[in-house]
Image (cartoon, rainbow, N blue to C red; front, side, top):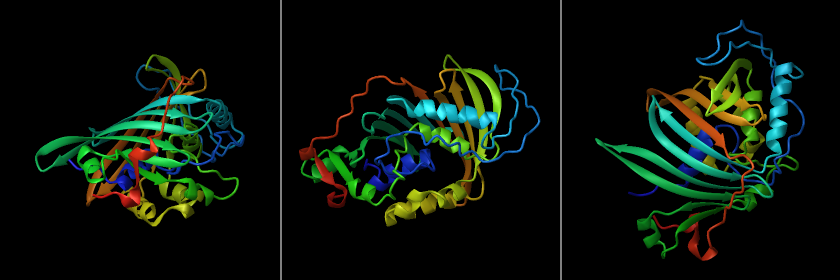
Length: 309
């Protein structure tokens, strides 16, 4: 089966990490030290989830105790060197995509991902496996065997990102869509952050936070939007149309070490006039463990524009 188009691979990453941006850039991953949470109204105390302690809501405005907790976690996360992320995306409860990703944050940003996507054609369901490598300079997607044969045996499609990084506004620094601090930044931008309670997640005692985010507003205010290529802009416009006006619900669990343990985002979308519920679960493990990520040999890569389909 033909592999997913290169733009679709990038788009899938962007969709999974919705508003964090799609470019690997020169960011050093450091926190700016400023809490950017919006004000949130206090809500009545709510029962904790099954197995957890009763939750309490708290105002999440800048300077509030809750905002301070999230900023502490963001600062701690920004000092990490690596993490493994396991991502599962479902549509109406049916698993569609799984992604296993090693993320190296320091001394340089790099990722290696293997994703499996379930595709249904007529009454037949098949899987497509895609392997990618990302650095500040380039994004690589492994070609399927039949495509490699059409391209002189070269195994990897390459999209150079250095030029795009040079257009990033000074001091802004494009960040990896898999930068773990961005999960905390997303929650901080919620207008109704609340602390739900404590739970045990994957054997780790963690504090559960919840909130909702207006995705259209976030994209409009994202400095990286102005640097989107026409192809990426068209793709993200289609994604934004599917979002509609329904806010993104985000749940985040942070361990006692102030590092993320798990994140779940949920969104009601409309595709081909059909309403669906999209949910993405990211599990974080192996913080600060050694990560070996190597880019494909130059003689095994071919520029995206030159790939024969």
